[in-house]
Length: 224
Image 1 (tube, rainbow, N blue to C red):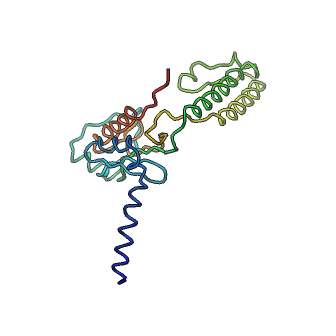
Image 2: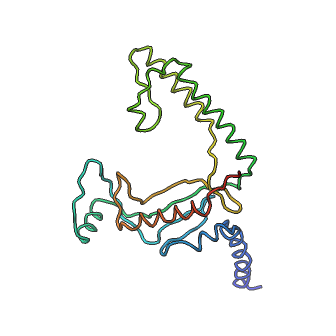
Image 3: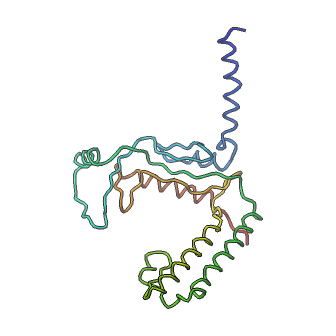
């Protein structure tokens, strides 16, 4: 058989096989997601992940909007500023895939997590630091204790070390699932936040639209 015919034959055999192994094509829910993508977005399977990305690039630059007044500029000035101060990249969001968790596996993980958080709730009493709880710092996130003495510092250190050890045992339970997979939020990039400015602005709203679509279609429905 001529070499070029052999090559064509191999391609005809391999390409359908690769297509069949694509997780998206094997999963009705993922196929549904792909069919509802906003215009200008793609969805593909990569390295045990589902990646949604904007076809057109975006420009990002780092700013601190908390301490900086945003100056009003026209479109040309804004584009020029981004190209001068920022970098060109892609707006994307990805989800790590695992074989779909069974209800039994989820319940087991949730029970283990409940025990872990119950242990953590008893640690302040164990290390006698309840009175050192700092409500102001804790409002910013987490559970904070402010020491008054060197002994307090030592006790808080022990508390934090044991808390970190217990938290390391907590299992991340999926709240998203498709027909065959459990989805775990993974990487988001090219999106506007308190420290990042993005152009064009609609890229951020498009990304959130994709994120909300995944949440709406794939959110795990708890059994009554």
